[in-house]
Length: 389
Ligand code: MG
Ligand code: ZN
Image (cartoon, rainbow, N blue to C red):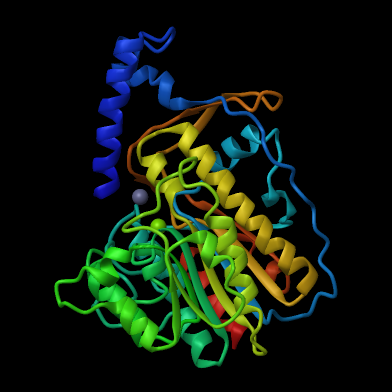
């Protein structure tokens, strides 16, 4: 709810600014008309990074490491708007194995991020709002916990609060996604090696008076608040908490997701038995809820660059499976115009909420061929578990 409030304030501010400046083409009447939301629907930033293409080296038959990358709310239109904005290319083009995930939850055709995250992490369909529990509210083990039990290193990275539904699904077991302080407390019960995201508040300003950051330090974690310091960590356990709640969206956030992903890979790959890492591009969803194409594009491009970092490691490692998917689509987005030369994109939306359409699945590395065609979102969780067994 907090980001909704923040956007409401910035929306009112934007309208005030537009009224005062009387910008050509973005008059007050147009902005008010839901059929002509020109200001929010058009991205005009242009292309800005070079995509690299990787060759998988010395590929093994089975993966030792799994990197699961979740673009929250990232359907094909979100991906293609970013691809258009970047001159027609994304790191995602490296993936040759593609499929589709059916995202419905146990109680709703349209999932939320809690049930969607739990499908991917635990391999079960559950009700909207559930984190790591089944429809009867019983705890179900998740892929990160299984990896941890097997002696693999594990990590979570998100741009949202690390206690938000998606990363929480790989850590906690609570009947309601809003129990942020309970979710934060579950980090202390685990043996996770690296986590980087927002959510300081849920660790340090708690109703029960506990200071979980101090408890993490006592357990041997380096608790670090700035991304510039986080990326200097070369060994040991790391808790990176870079915002009180969610990190601000792009472009204000700056470099956070890519260095966080790189740092997590550097630390986790020091283990002998392999690792499991989940990386979330959390805020594609936030901006898609607001039907703001520039935000959707910038968040998806940021996520794609994080995918590039994962691919670079996986291509030379040969034992790492990279899976990129979404928990659901947000906004019912489509693209009604674009230009590869200028990078301009015209996004259109059918909703301010999540939608029921299937989302793409991309895989690279050992085991990649097992994730093609149509599949249940739960199959992704189940297949990962099978591959790590
Ligand atoms: Mg999320
Ligand atoms: Zn959402």
